[in-house]
Image (cartoon, rainbow, N blue to C red; front, side):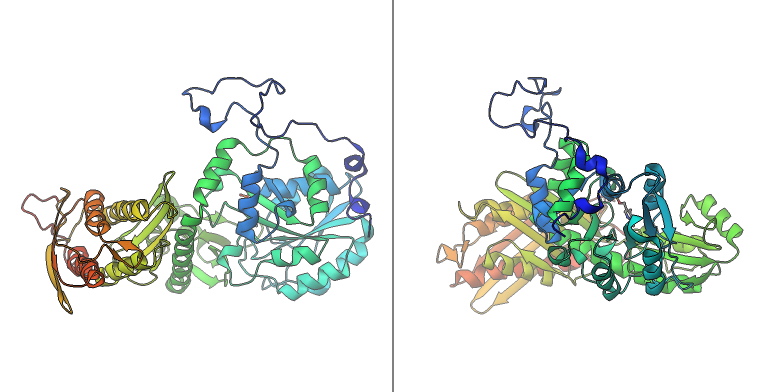
Length: 548
Ligand SMILES: *Cc1c(COP(=O)(O)O)cnc(C)c1O
C-alpha cells in the first residue's frame, strides 16, 4: 500500500501539475499577484481583503483541527461539507467507469455529485426500519469490484436520524482497504456516539465529514471539512480551487468559535436536545403523526396521516417542514427550532401546548484586544451554570450571584490576566449586565428589590432598581486589598460596570472585618435582591409609568 491513495485516484489528477497560487500574503512587499495595493472601501486595511487568501488558511485550519481533535494536515477545509463530497468524487471517480455506494434513504448530494462527475451509483438501501444493512453493503462492494471507489455512510443519517453501529464501519474499513469509507458526521454534535475522527490516524481509507452549518449556526457562511490521512487530503487539495475560503469567512468562523464561545455552544446544544425530546413526546398526541422515528440529530422524521390537511395548516401558518413523500411515502422531516418556534409547530400539528411565556434566555459576546467573553443567561432555569474567568475567587463570586439570583449562567472569559485582573473583572460585569438586560426584555413582571445579607461578622445592605437608569453607590472599606486573586478595589468596580449595562441602580452598604466575607456578601446579597426582581409573577410592570 505504499502507493496509497494514488492507486485509486483518477489518473488525470495524478498527472497534472497543480495550479500555482502564491499562497498567503506575508510582510514582504507583494507585487506578485496583481492585487490592489489599497483596501476596499470603506477602508478596513487591517482586514487584508485586498490580498488573496491562502488555499487553506493556517490559523483557521489549526482552529478546526483543535475543534475536531485532529491534526491540521488531516483537514481539508471546503465551502461546506458539500464541497468536500464534490472534491472526493472529482479526485477519485473516473467518469463512465467508477462508482460510489450509498445507502438510501440518505443525504442526496452524494448522488448529485456522482451524477455530475459521471460516476455510477450503487445502492444498498437501509432496511425497512432504516437500520443499516451490513451484509448487503458488503455484498454490493464485493460485486462492484475495484471500480467502486467511495462508500458514503451518513451517521446520524439524514433524513432518518439514526446512527450506524460503529463496529460495522470499523469492519468495513478493514475489509476493503482499497475503498474509501466516508462517514458523514454532519449531525455528530447532536448524537451520543463518538466521532470517527479518533480512528483517522490508524485507518488510511477512512474519511470523516464535519460541518459548521448545523450545530454552530454558520450555514450561511459555508464551511465544512473532510478529515482523513494527509495523503488523501493532499490529493484532494490538488483538485480544490486555489482560494475557496474567503477572508470574511475565516474571520466569521474564528469569531464564532473562540474558546470563550464554546461553553455557549454547549449550552445551546443541550437546550436543542431537551427540545427534541419534548417535541418527540408532544407529537405523540398529534392527530397527524403516526410514527416518530428515534433521532440522534436535530430533526425528527415523521410518518404523517391526513397529509393534505396538515400541509394546508402548515401553509396557513407559514411553517415549512421538509416533504419527503416523493421518495418516502407519507414521510416528512421536522427540524427542531427554538422553544418558541417549536410551540408554533406543535400548534399546527394540532397539539395543545400550555401557553408558556417565552423563556428569558439571552447571550452576549464581547471581544476586544483585552478580553474575549461569552455569556448566556437563563432567568427561568437556574440549572446548567458553568463559569470560567481564569480567576478562582471571581468564579466563586459569580457562581454565588447566579445561585442566589436563581438564574442559570454560562460565562467564559479569556482575559489578559498576565497584565492584571482588571479587564477580566470589568468586561465580564459589562457583558453579564448586557445579557441580563437582554433576557429581561420589556421586564414584564419584574420589580424593584433589596436584601440585607448577614455573613458572620459582615453585613451587606443591597438595594436594586431595574429602572433603566444606571447608577451605583457603594459604601464600605475593605481591611485588606485582596481576597484571593481578586483585588478588593474591583468589587465596587464590578457593580458599577454591571449597573451600566444592566440598566439598574445598585446601592450597596457593606461593613465587616474580613475582605473575603465582605465581597462575598455583596455578590450573594445582590443575587438575593435580583432573584425577586427577575421573577415573573404577573405581567404588570412595577412602575406607574408602564415602562422600566
Ligand atoms: C447539511 C448536510 C451536509 C452539508 O453540510 P454543509 O457543510 O452545509 O455543506 C452534509 N451532509 C449531511 C448529511 C447534511 O445533512
